[in-house]
Length: 181
Image: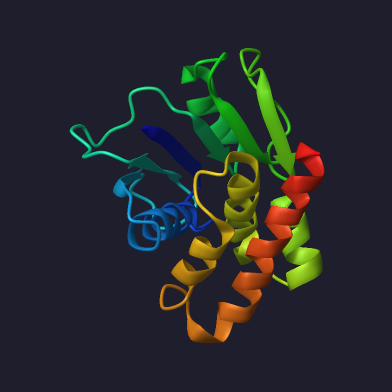
């Protein structure tokens, strides 16, 4: 089965890193076919940023998403930009409720995760919010296992931040499981 995911936010939030970790987890540790693309504005930080991932059990013949299954959003401008293009009957929207306060009217399936707030209060820095969102994505979709994402963290985040990134992944997973229950 083909799954299509978009991570969106602004530069510096780590949306591309989250997509890469998903790609590594599903591709390297679960043996699936994966494709990842990304785009961002001319600004190094603060501009629009998105990354798209396609996961499949079969060979991927087209690497761009055709109809997003999951939209993971970390900023209001990203929600405003990409939330209007979803399929309201298909797309699950997972969003950082710390920074996203308005959902487009066509969003029917949405799960808020206070990722930035939790990263700041529980882990001391907002920079772990992307990993909290990735953990939440994992819990809500089951597209990749938590174990595979934990393996993907090793060697793909700075060694001095590995423990906090693992905590962030678990925190996001638990926050989303509370929502899904």
